[in-house]
Image (cartoon, rainbow, N blue to C red; front, top):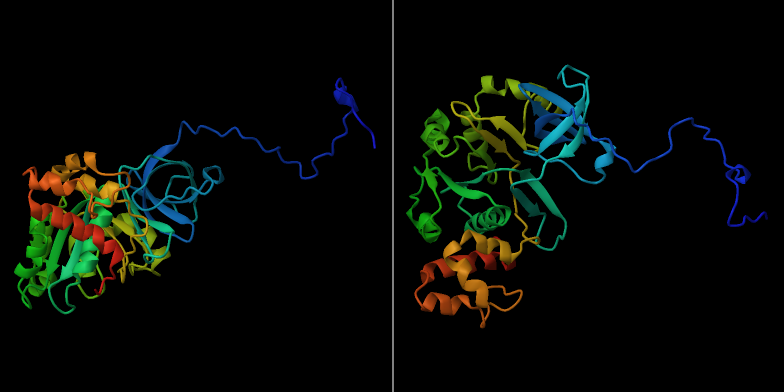
Length: 336
């Protein structure tokens, strides 16, 4: 075997020719300074539909992004064919830093978190007051995910003609959460949409709720068919000509500047990824009292500093109870 010394002439080095004739790999990535800005409207089997100006453009993630995935609501930079015409494809080359993230896990034992929506301002939790019965544990879990991800919560209570909202609202009174109460008649006639729309103007709002609560009916009222022309290209991909809420879909809000993100119905909302240190940010009246807490405090243990903080009159005891109830929902099943 031939050995080379320290001063080997490069002419002595034998190299195999590149039979494929392609360029050698490099770590230098193009900057794509001329890339256009867009927003991801929906994702389906690796294909992403993005809004670029007023066009729905089909795109794929560039290889240089590696495992970094784009989700609905992401602000992205695209290159390639941006015409939005049929059978054209662009590339997503950058994903802008997110301002908020709504995450969930399949269950509390699953360490793999799934990003549902990025950059949303608000989470609308749609719950029926009856038929089906309300599930406070699921509401609690959605609230924790909202606080953890930096989203403001909104309660939308439907079917008030079947049951009064007082008892359910009493559970969340100390959290100062805005809410809208609608009846089944209002939901079917579209009258409920006007009152809900007041809370959505100028915001990106993700809607969550389990089957039968009227979420899809409400979303359809907020986004009439004529407003879906921007996502006409989406429907042919995700639902054979119609959106069946099998994946998250961002739609422009009718009658106001804003976006509605329709998400698939949820049966459970896992919180394995939740950090109590982030949830406390939603309780500014209590957050200052955590300075004396032990490291990695769960805020529900004997030496938690929040007990003394509340006893000294810095915050309402009901607020501490609400915080601990929400944090404890990570350890309870939704039916408990």
